[in-house]
Amino acid sequence: MGFGLYVAVPVGLMALLLAASGLATLSRGWLLLRQRRHIVRPRLFGWAQLLIAAALGVQLIGLLVIDPVYRPVVVMPGSVALLFGLVLTTRAQRSPRDRQGD
Image (cartoon, rainbow, N blue to C red; front, side, top):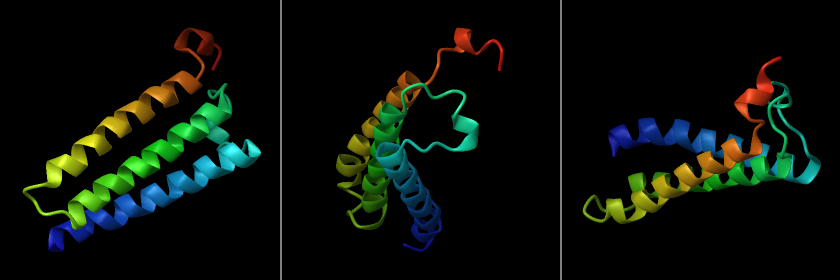
């Protein structure tokens, strides 16, 4: 479990930051300064951030708690959720052809 802790702490912090940012986006519509120009659907982006945070949490549980034999059963749904969160994030952004002036 020694190496797992070196991975778990940064991943856990990232999941907490993403969850806080997603909640702020959903409740108040707040976005980070760099994101304000590109995000056209803030609620969808907030849900995507929460989904990614939950997926990171599932993968963290799979890394630390689950027996290595059963780890893929937990980690694979987390990976699918990460990919789905990425799709939601891209759907919340302005299309690249609309970004010509950025």
